[in-house]
Length: 92
Image (cartoon, rainbow, N blue to C red; front, top):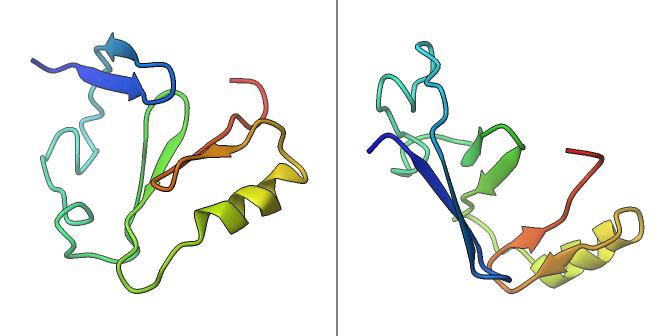
């Protein structure tokens, strides 16, 4: 349908937007997904109006509770649930 749907896992809120496609974007326009398919390194995906970052790490474990503690010393409101970290940095 050409829409991007996001879900806030803490509140259960869904949001649907219809972003403009960048004709030069490998994912949006050319439908190439080497990072999601595990064919390219590093496994980091960034997209969206408000920056969202996904890190797909298979070669080592990621200690989210330790990262939460480290970030919480400078960024208020950092939360994690074992699968992801959530925080807002600056004013978006």
